[in-house]
Image 1 (tube, rainbow, N blue to C red):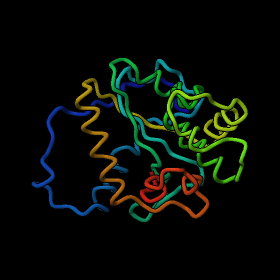
Image 2: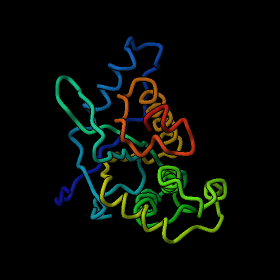
Image 3: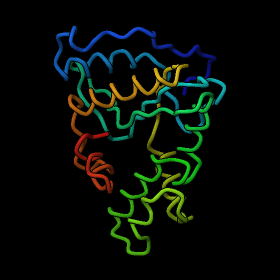
Image 4: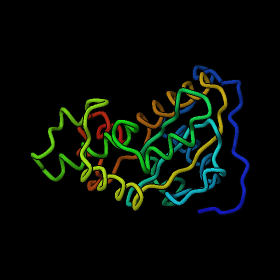
Amino acid sequence: MVKEKIMPVTIPNKHVSPEKVIATPKSLVKTIYSLFEGLPLFDYSYDAKSLPKDGIYFFYENGEQCEIGGMITDRIVRVGTHHADNRFRDRIRNHYKGNKNSSVFRTHIGSAIINRNGTSVININEWMKHMTPTNNDLEELITKYIKENFRFRCISVESENERLYIEERLIATLSHGNYPPSNHWLGHFAERKEISNSGL
């Protein structure tokens, strides 16, 4: 983890129309990876003061890698943001330390653990519903898995409309041109098949 105080990178307000850019999905993905490669990489022990108040995050998972320009690098496995202003730090905290009702990310990881382990103790349909009772034992497994396996980078984006716009475009680009997940990726067991299909 980078310990020095850093200034978050800000996305410009102007966008280039996709129609004016001649590029393949793979080349766009390579550009995305190269832009983010130089950003600080955080783990669960991050200092909240080093994070922007509003922004977009990119999660990397241990064991998930891809080859960019002949070099092996960590593969982006999730892109996310938040709606209300000044909630980015809360969003990251909820992913690492919250529960399924405060983090959709945790919901998906929980569903993958349920399906992978083949447990019948927890009803997967009830688990996927928002604001339903959670399971403390499973939440502990989720917290342990995220802390041990996930790191993230982030960029500062102050405007809600900008955050949602950029998040949507990044997810669409990575979904169509991203590098495939490994055979042992936990996401293959996620209840929502688009996660396994897209690798995100």
